[in-house]
Image 1 (cartoon, rainbow, N blue to C red):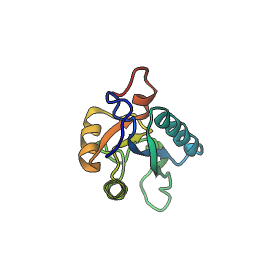
Image 2 (spheres, helix red, strand yellow; image 1 turned 90 degrees about the horizontal axis):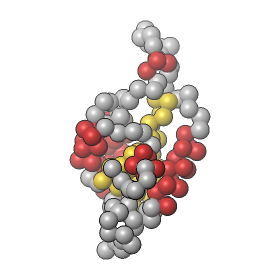
Image 3 (tube, rainbow, N blue to C red; image 1 turned 180 degrees about the vertical axis):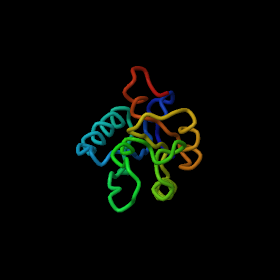
Length: 136
């Protein structure tokens, strides 16, 4: 049984995974994950995994223009990530008995609900951790 120091904070004592969707142009994505890890650990969480989905820009082999324009957009409006990456993360969350997933990206209410259902744990965004006074 996990020991929580602060019953009012679902991240205190929780095992969490960090998740981020990053444009291929963004070279400092590890720094952003490190900052998020520091926020989570400051709330009493233990980071047990990190997952990154990179959004590439190469459309040169296809005849579809606009790859660079799409780089900052999510793969899916409902989940941000590809189905394969989401399945990988969900399996890892179940195996590690993760309590929460913390996304670098800002999430909508619908995305939180869908992701929580798929991942089987609480879902937060980095905005929630950085906000004064707690989680969203």
